[in-house]
Amino acid sequence: MSPRALAFVVLAAGCQRATAADSRAPRADEAGNARATPAVSAAPAGPDAEAPVSSALLMGTDAAARPLPFGPATPIARYTCPAIQRGGAFRSFLAGDDTRVAFVDGNDPTAIVNRSPTGALAPNYVPDDLVDIKDGRHRKPSECGSAHECMREAAAAALRRMLDAMRAEGIEGRIQSAFRAFATQCWVFANWAHQARGGFCEATEQSALPGHSQHQLGTTVDLFTREWADEGARRGQGVFRNGFGCTRGGVWLDENAWRYGFLVSYPIHPDDRLHGSRCLARADRSVPVNPKTGYKHEPWHLRFIGEDAGARYHAAWLASGPGTPGEITLEQWLRAGRGLVGDAELPACDGCQCGACATLAGDDWRTPCGKASLHLGADGRVVAPADPPHLAGAHVSPAPGGAVDVEAIVVSPAHTPTQPPLFGADAPGYPDGATYLAVAANAGVAPRAYPDLPGAWRIAIAPDPAGPTAWPWRASLAAPDLAATWNRANVVLPAKPGELHVHVRVTPPPSARALSVALSLDGAAHDVLTLPIH
Image (cartoon, rainbow, N blue to C red; front, side, top):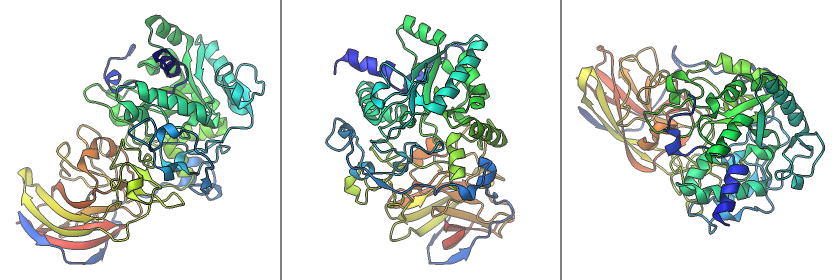
């Protein structure tokens, strides 16, 4: 395809994000040793344990009546985007097993569509009530996307009401892209991957893989303003550029779209906001994807879930503490309604985020990330390895300020589930008074909680004599270089396979004579070691 055609696709059909370089540019407006001996001890919750949040309270409905977390795995008869499979146009690719089943019912208005293997729609899914947004006339899927922008009937009606409300305040909305069929998204993604400076891997953070796009639901729209579009045309930059979120139209959508049932799916993570701004990202460091959504900020990407659901989400969002580490996105709200724990599922393994990805492929050679992945079963749930990890040894050494450096040696089978916090040079461990229920695991951010996720192994450390919180210091078995992104959420990650050395600094109370080091799983401690510290 010619460069001109490629450019047309990116500007006219894509749901692209700004490049990493663009995201940094200003906005337009805006000492003991031991070897392990097997032992198991119960680890009571303790008074500081975080109480689980009721799914019914978050959703404002009866959680027991909600569908199962993942729907039945529906076989895909024919996957129609071979460009992103092995042997296709790209070095990175989706495993065949991750393109053979779909878990998502696109007719569910609260369906979870995301980057994970369980978050994809089948290639042949199309809504059965697509209408032209402008006049409400029913359209065939083949008529949508070029001559007509289409959405599902209820979403289109709500969008027209919202556009009327914007117009009444002097803001003229401009629709850029609405419903996109699987084949269109295949074309969009492939061309974006060809054109992006970072190729396929940059594209996965800025454009959805086919089947994983919320646009295929028929309830999602990329919405700008005429002023923004006209300015982009004059500058030769199009609409998908930085700064829209801080314009009058972008702020209006952020504050008011929920009243019409539309939500901004991909906000800025609280850790990445410049001075707390909801529309400006910090510029002092590279901003990775938001691990709670899987993508970078998109203030124009709006998904319709219905006015009543939008109001319930907004109430739950306010209750979650906007601007704090606990602030939810639409993803967490939808997950709560299905009884899912943790902030998100990991992206599908495509060779771009090895060490933080998941796959339905049962053999390592079938997936580009091999052993550096989580294995999912046929029902989409994480599968534990046949053999558990074990603690092979540990030692402690004094550190400045009364702290102690702990090194735990763990033998971890491939695909062992673990979870944050991860510790490395940027954030070595726990300062005085911090526990896994309140720790800033990245530098320069607010403390957050990392309560136990079912099936996830971690290193656990406790003072002897014990304090009020059982095993107050916990550390991930994942690769430390994942910390910058994945400490910003509480998710199940794959442990680094083989023998790994977990380093974490803790600050025991003056009364502590020793430290206990163990592997923790579901509230129980395994392979407990006791090491003197004086």
